[in-house]
Image (cartoon, rainbow, N blue to C red; front, side, top):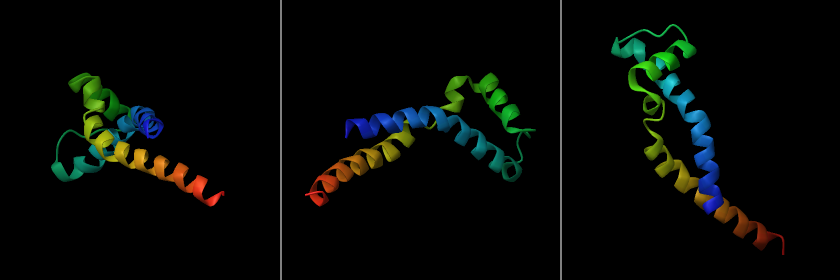
Length: 86
């Protein structure tokens, strides 16, 4: 279970900033706030205005959701692998 959670943590550290940028760019036309010209422009603007925490704003919630899923997934995978390989 621990390795599943740690795998999800490493994964989140890599892809969560990309997801934050994607969400902000998707919602900018609906919410009518600052227009980002590109993904790199959005990332640099978020980093300047909110710091690194802005890019990792939802880390806790993401780990609570996907971390639990990965823990259960890998635990069940190992248990079922042993069961079906007998």
